[in-house]
Length: 427
Image (cartoon, rainbow, N blue to C red; front, side):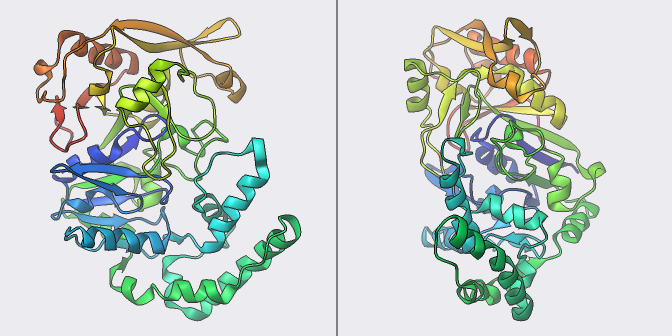
């Protein structure tokens, strides 16, 4: 039985939630392996919309056990709010299991995130201000607070006080802000302990035992390849590794345990926050994509920057993540254009680049070289088989496959769980 990792192939917001939710109907364990609540997964089930920021997308599948892995940073208040909201809407879900080694986003992480972003001014990264970056910084600096720490008040207090010794100095002397009370932080974290205790596990052992027993495991991250701290468009990236290899670290499994790597790519391109974006549109086509595609952040509500499909970008992601399949989302949004441009290369200072430039500076100055494909006017939201798609639409999919170098096995033609065209089996 396979284990599958799902990765965004662009800058996030590709529709990983829909794909993961759909795949989740056929898996036993759904594991979130990276990121925090700085991203959102939007799911539409039976016409009802759900937006999850921290909980694994598979949580709406009652037969699936969901796990928050050690690579995730967890805001315990958001964790509780999401569970309470699902319960209030009558959704009965098994409580997600959570790794004892996952790190916690505290209130001081959120304060530091907002203060430092404002301090950067024009050099800002474009973070969501939810404390994710500072929490990962503390993790790497060995000053982090882990889930297991809230069960030992003495250790928790020592760690919080040690972290605030440094941060309060910065807040007061550099940023001219008031210091944070360590006891308030400790008590806030302790308030979650008893409710969480039954669900805290050694996630690495639990997942590996499941694989040993032949269970199907689906690994999902937040963000996407080009927001990866190592392989993304640095420094305009997140603070973790949402690429396929990150699943091994963030869930605690060996690389030989991953059977399939599925890239989720939107039929056009969007981005939230700062950073270069070669195919970004500043005209009425960009506004049209944003309006029809409802391109506003699920977490922040910010309007997304929109542009045409960038095959150079997705080919790079396919190479690094060793994608076995691509799930192409929101193809229905492209209905109605006479010609649909696809970026097939970049021009940088008069030189053609068929692959991603190796330097940040070159990518920043890259201009798209387009190939123009014939569009289609038909409504494809009711398509359920590839043959149901108009010929020009089929040709668009086939051309993307050629450019990416990876087969497209699934296509999203609408927001609903059932609005998909499956060409090849993904699980």
